[in-house]
Length: 410
Ligand SMILES: *Cc1c(COP(=O)(O)O)cnc(C)c1O
Image 1 (cartoon, rainbow, N blue to C red):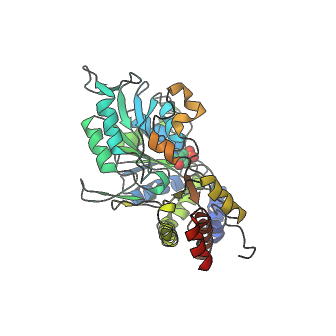
Image 2: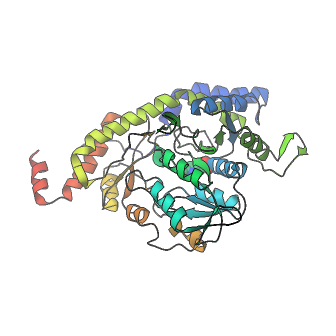
Image 3: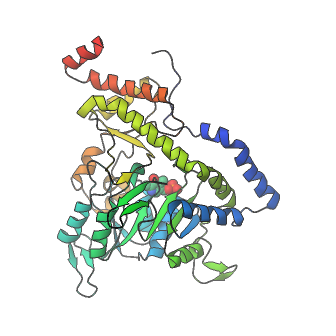
């Protein structure tokens, strides 16, 4: 192969070239009206994003982390509670649990979807909790804390198995808040409700991030919560704005967590393209699948169950020599990334939680194998062919000699 250009892991420049005149006009509009905080752009974006998700309400906030925190508090998570999530996620999920005064508790992931394994959630609640005779709620034997909520993460843009999780949550009186920070536009087929539901429209509330690299990204920090619960929306609006509904009349102590108007204006422009961009991501995923499937079991490709329509925030594959694969691609100027190198329960920050190696075997076994290939709407077919060729050459070089001879003869 010639000295081809590098293939970045993520391309945030190309999509903005096409949008530049529209994005610039957002800034000009803000300058000429001095509408920097709140105002029509924020209101309009909230309406439009709620419509996109199919929820009654959307409340724009400063980041996905803030969205998780506000959603947790407004949905009813209280200081001292135990909140169940997965160890294979970005740390913001558990940071927000701690910010709400609660404590993260983990259950392992499904080996194929990399999302919460509902059977493990049930096992945790049934085998490792006792019922508090006063409240009837489940109490974690490990921590002595009442389990009040579960936070499924739709990781990499693939849906967690929400029907199963909702059913268990109902049985055990748990609040369900979705971490939809990687899943704008992903869909789940609910057999319970006999229809496709959008990420962010299934739990009691959900959090989205508009960090620049997400499927819908601001040109800075931004996030939102979505919900069908008017009271959750009202409380979040208060919380993000110093606990006031009317300026300087503070009903509660809040915080400065608003979505700013320039970001809201930018998000409105990009939201119009999101469905198309997600379609392009799905096409890219299908193309990778076609190119890499011939490698068979030597490399594990993303799995999309029939009930999930993912939006491929990331395209994550598995190989037992992940580092070798990354180096091999790197030498061909192809960038990759790891999501995530260290499971949360083994992070230094969470030593105090008392987990040990071996506690979540699936997460721990997969973490050293996961590698994210370049994935974005503007990724070109010839770039994907180069990535796939790189993966193929590496995998075949690791195979017994017959495979080598075959590929050499091809
Ligand atoms: C990005 C992300 C967040 C946090 O969003 P920020 O906007 O960066 O605060 C939370 N959870 C997951 C799974 C994420 O990917």
